[in-house]
Structures are given as structure tokens and as C-alpha cells.
Length: 341
Ligand code: F6P
Image (cartoon, rainbow, N blue to C red; front, side):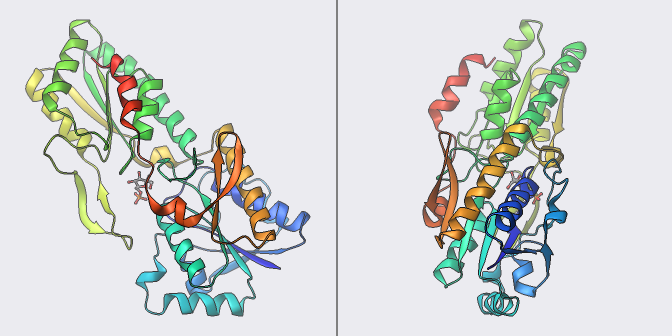
């Protein structure tokens, strides 16, 4: 049997750990041949692939990024895209695909399964916003990086009596903001699920200054002021219709400075959160996802995604996984509010 592997969407620490697990178990337990398609769905569309042997996955467990590279290609936006993929798979004698990705990559995986291609999905995103799994790998690493940044910013904010606003990733979901904000002892956490009042933020900031303690405000890139609009870096959309967000941190820092008269600066963590080596937790989760994806392919169980439920890896329908984004429940946010101000 020949099995293709690809990584799509934004990169994420742990992708290489999944690839390694798939290749190791695929070859050593099943005797498969593994093929790596390059650049997400662009690989199966254009036939850009490479064989993956045991040597290719040596030393990649701890490496960030993806040895297969990635893209945000949507084959359903390409004329005859599905037919092209079918003919590449037939030409290269690939019987099944393991697609590692987030909502977009797995949305395509679901449609391809409906169109007759055997695909098993593996959930990845630092945003942790995929439905049907308790956690995605990459999230723990992103939270650790953001928390370390908050810890470092606390000491400099305090020394200079400054308010520091830290913008973290999270287009539609505030998981990174909430977890890093709680872990880092933030004075304010703002996320896309709940519009915020600038007056309230200013009140919390002033209260923190009164206690001779510098305020740290963690804001997700997709957070919205009441009645306001998402801050966009550019109006351009990718092939899944996503705009580039960014700018809420600087905007909020200016608002705070203007209203409090205190120096206020923004730090945008950006892609630092996605780079570098995965945490031990993410290495283990990614490895287990890879091993279980191989089992699903071996069982001929296509149209499923491997998922974490408690401490077990289970299979869920791709349709269930991509039906709805997993946003932060408001009660989780309200738990943290006692620390604001
Ligand atoms: O999907 C994960 C994510 O990290 C989002 O939070 C963010 O908006 C997006 O990727 C940005 O990715 P890129 O800059 O690669 O388009």
C-alpha cells in the first residue's frame, strides 16, 4: 500500500512529530510505502511529492515547522481541482492520504472523502479551535511561548510604570489569550468571543496602577471593542476567504495611553508563537495522533479525524470536526475575571 501525507495551513510545532510517527509505524508495522506531498493541497494537485523513508524522519521529532512545507491552497478554488488530485493519486499509485491541518485543510479532506478519495485527518492548530477534539497539538507550545513573553514583560513594565499590551494569535477563538493570560497573571484578557468595553479596560488598568503594579493586557488578534470592527492588516483574502488580522494591540495601547496619560506600549507576538521546537506535551500528542491515523488508514476507516477525548485518542467524523469552531465558553472567561484590574 502507498500512503500520502501532507501538511496544510499555518505551520505549527509538532507537525514533524506526526510525520515521523506516520512513517515509522507505516513502514515498520505495515510495510507501506510513504509519500510526502509538498506544500499542502498543492502537492496532490500538481504531483509535487517525495518518498518518505525511515532516514527522512530521523532527527525531526523536535524540529518546528514542517519538512513537507505548507500552503493555504484550496483545491476547490482550482478549476478541475478534484479531478487533478484523483489523476495524480492514480499516477503515483497512492491509495490513501493522511492530511494534517486545521479547519480549512480538514474541510477540504472532508469534501475529498465525499468525492471518493480516502482521507484521514489529523488536527493541528496553535489556536486550539477545532471542534471534536479536546486539544490540538501546537497549542501547548504557543501558550508556553506567550506565557514566557508575559513573564518577561511583567518585569520591564513594572520597572517603567508602563502598561503593556500583548497581542497573541487567535482569529476566532481566545484560547491562547485565556490560557497564557491566566498562566502569566495578566491584569486583563480580551478575546474574540466577548466584545470588550474600552472604558472597562481603562478602569482595570488604572486600578492596577493605583496598586503600584504595572498592568499587562493580553489581547487576541481577533478581539473586538464594543461596536467596533476587526483590525485588519490588509484587506486581501487567502483562498479560504481569511483576511489578515492584526493591529488591535497597538490600537488599544494608544487608547489606554490617551485616556490614562500613562505610557502604554504594545508587543505583537505574531509568528514567534508558531516557531521552534514543540513542548513535550505537543510531541506526545502529535506522535499519538500520527500513530492512530495510521491505524485508521489500515482499517480503511476514511472520512475520520483522530481526536483527543480526555486522555484517549478516538476517531470522529471529519464532518463533525469541521462543523463548528470550538470557541472559549464564556464561563471559562468569567472564571478568570476575578484577576482583572
Ligand atoms: O490559524 C492559526 C493562525 O495562527 C491564526 O491565529 C492566525 O490568524 C493565522 O494563523 C496567521 O497565519 P499566517 O500569517 O500564516 O497567515
